[in-house]
Image 1: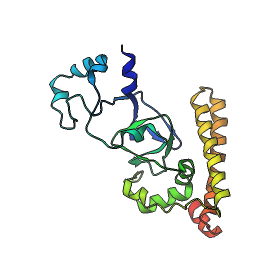
Image 2: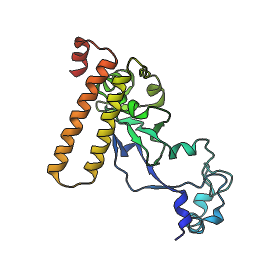
Image 3: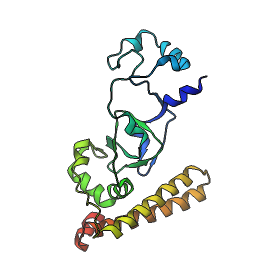
Image 4: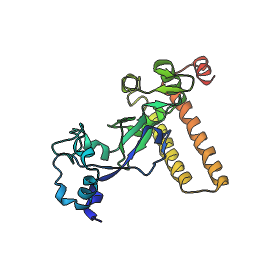
Length: 227
């Protein structure tokens, strides 16, 4: 009803929506009425929020006014390039490189900064999956908790002159994987999907090989990871 409203309605992801190199957005939206918003500029949103009555007005996590979200110093980061990952996973790395400006709920975390495609490739590799499974809190036989404190302790090599060539190869493969997933989302033909999945598998296997080189693993060490 109000063109202005689009400026503060953002797509939001839950942990269950985030997968390895991809997401399955559930069509959920967040109304980002942060502090400083003049609600009178968004009449359709104001009417929508009022329809929730006392329930929205009495909630604990509000900002300066009942229509505001709670104060947050990093709202602007959601609009920027970032990696998103779920708090709990099925024992596999599920990191998604986002440039679409998704917001996230409390079942996700995000990583911002530089070299995010490189980081996406390394964190999604078989070596890092093995490392995380040995270091993080496991949830039963199939789940794992990717809490922030575990992810922050991962020993990721810094990009340097020595490993620049390997790093660039990882980035190129990640870009290719992202493109393949976009193509996969755009088709319903099973034969095409199978072909794209085969290409994705190949790119991931190449990243695994390069990451082994990046960490200077021996053949015996690689065999342990590949078991």
